[in-house]
Length: 74
Image 1 (cartoon, one colour):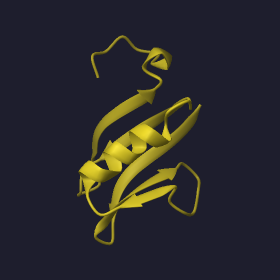
Image 2: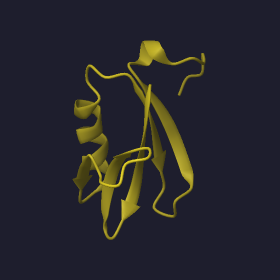
Image 3: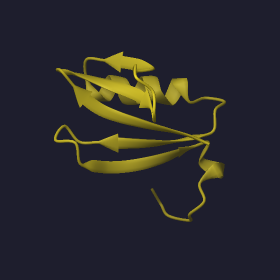
Image 4: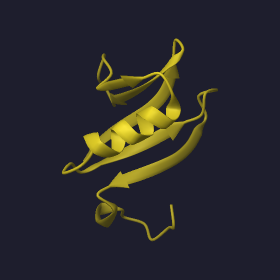
């Protein structure tokens, strides 16, 4: 399972695979990166950690939902 992070970087938001040097997707707003991430992760198995603008962890999402190892509502 690949791990991805959504973080604010230089005035835009990036989706970056853990360990990668470059972003897979970059968008000007958090709402746009979340929408693009949903489309990007279609058909893939992975974990996406969503960070706040200050870098702290806000939420983690598993794609597809059926691959989520925990039974949390998140």
